[in-house]
Length: 103
Image (cartoon, rainbow, N blue to C red; front, side, top):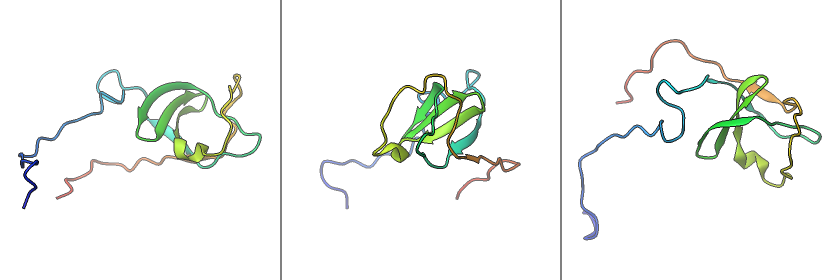
């Protein structure tokens, strides 16, 4: 059973994409790559276009790149100073078609 402090409610799905800046007509271009790892002497900089969970979506000269902030542990955060994207990237491959329902 449920604890006294909790009351079961019917499911009401909510799309939070707009809150994270990734929805509707104002949605920018899709991410083209993600940072694979941070390396000594590397740099990544760009305009923050969206954030969701630990992921920062940065508009760079290569397109939108996703940086998982958990990779940043132990690294010094300094201005990229206009440096080009110089870290290993993994291309994001888009699967054609539409995802079916999960259940």
